[in-house]
Amino acid sequence: MRRLPPPVITLLGLLAIYGLNLLLPQFRSASLGGGLAASIFFTIGAGLLVWSGQAFRKHQTTVNPLRPERATSLVTSGPYRFTRNPMYLAMVLFLWSGFTYVGNWMGVAVVMACLIYFDMVQIAAEEAAMESNFGEDWTTYTQRVRKWI
Image 1 (cartoon, one colour):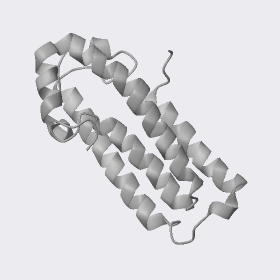
Image 2 (cartoon, rainbow, N blue to C red):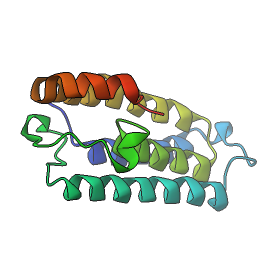
Image 3 (cartoon, one colour):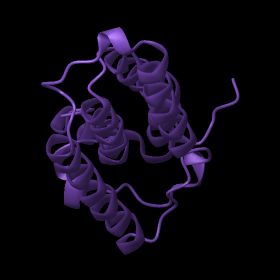
Image 4 (spheres, one colour):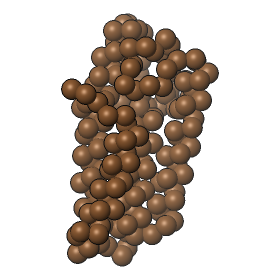
């Protein structure tokens, strides 16, 4: 299966959230919509994404999610001490930010669809490559650190 870059999935998810908000306004909730909650989720996601990228640069390994077999280091520091997938968690936070901003409950379906795609397609391929590249070190890491949070 050909995988799309995760940022593209995130962008498509955000477009779907906004599109569904326009097409199905009856599912809008005034109590959800708003900039403050969306800003908080977005800011946490952006910080997590930057922190994750810094950890990869520090270890001089690839951040290319479409070529995980090229990883030269197993990164277990920074946010990787708490979650094996902080970049995907950041992207889910961006999607959640879009959902809370528009306040349309249909956005939850989009967030969940993207999360499932990330988990079953992208992360599954990456974790198989990590196991192949790093063997017992990877297995030990997965026993210590959760996939998401």
